[in-house]
Length: 144
Image: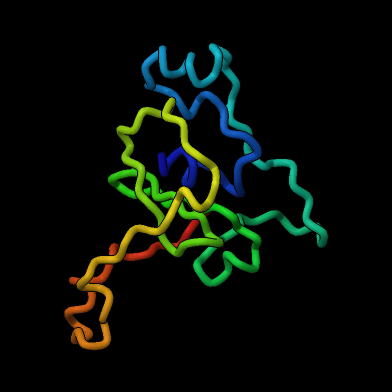
């Protein structure tokens, strides 16, 4: 997934196509696409105001608010973390084995941040070296 969505594109995506479903069971592909096939399209036709080549937009926790990002998707080994940016700094991880035909709400309130571990609630009293062991999973730069 990372190879296809992140590493395999220079700037970004105009549209994700059915090629993203390569290797999926035929009944899943048909249910998601109605049996149609179309290729993914990258943002190859961008023109910047100053004429310079377009570059990939980098979104970090610090820059997300300035870029009007509403949702973030972090690809993790165990699944995709879905973050409603205006309402949480972390989100639930949806396992890669989740059936893609599952209906999900797009209402941000339905995607709350995971409840922090009780051990992570009072890091002031935990020695710095021990914080990594009790802190929630490390945050990585968010890509969109």
